[in-house]
Length: 128
Image 1 (spheres, helix red, strand yellow):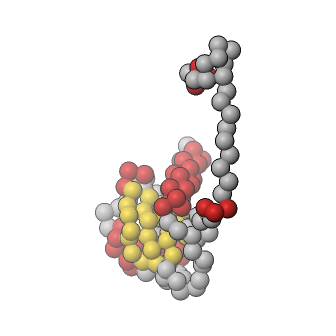
Image 2 (cartoon, rainbow, N blue to C red):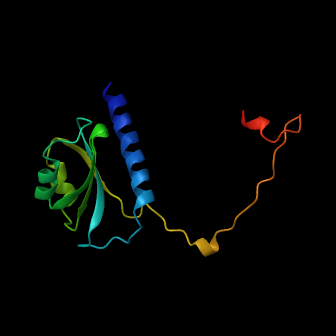
Image 3 (cartoon, one colour):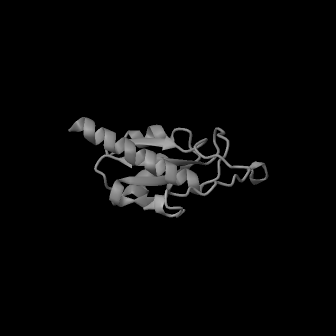
């Protein structure tokens, strides 16, 4: 059961990171520069004092996904992650630097996809 829970926590963390990477611009990592972190809590719920916990670790709570036990935080403190992990309610925390990629729209090429017709000649029947 513990392996299943760990696997589910990992999947939740990956999903949250993927969603976050879509909404935040990529930025190079610099020591002392503000970074965004995904914080995963053990109880699959964000504790009521998460903002205080994150502030005491040296960061700021940006958003809380209480239903899945994930919080988004920002910090310019190099020891932020280590400080968070001292609290036994935090399962893990990860910086999102280098998670997202900004595409150069000028370099993108649009490729047309040919219509696929079924045996009856209806191009929409393959979608049913």
